[in-house]
Length: 285
Image (cartoon, rainbow, N blue to C red):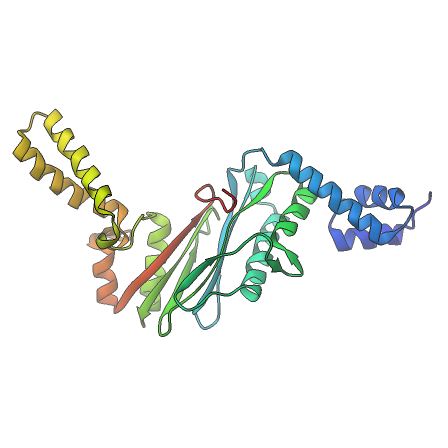
């Protein structure tokens, strides 16, 4: 049957599907526009299912912050190739979803909420946005992380998006007036992703295991057991904490200063942090 080109164009505008796919859907639906949209959605879901097992090692991590600095939305959307990650359509998809997430989802003060794929954003669920993107871009795309955070009363948030790669982002919650210092701490979280905010958060069994590993390492180097124990404690204090604990890390811009000392001098207290990165988390695992 003959299909009106204007109808094909309209379907293309409403679905973002390729022109030929739109025409085929209209032919299959005998010109029924709504049914054609359903057909495209069904095909998109089928394509998403076929591609679901493909590795997604590329993508974008992105955060956005409210004007008053008290609310943040963050996403990690992964894809198969760097070519797609740098594609303007893919970038727009992630940017639009972050903005929509900011408007649609919320968290209680002092809380970070993991947002489910069925959450409605910009008129349809996050999952449907991803499915439609797979149909359009023809590559496996997945929602790895979706979060919304709100600062505790009296605190603020600061974000950082890695502009060079686009594959990492962060936000921190802080008390005090040092917005510039907070921004640099957010950069620190991306530059050297920590596991804990403070030493007190590190579980004792983790510390005990690290001490035992370092003790055995010293013994293997020929040190007496009593000396090996002291060496192990020193190494954990110097190496483990300075690598894994944010406030104990050397500042990325001045290795002679700890992040905690920098924050204190700047008049801020870091309350919490979140690191978002491609390949680092999975929303559906």
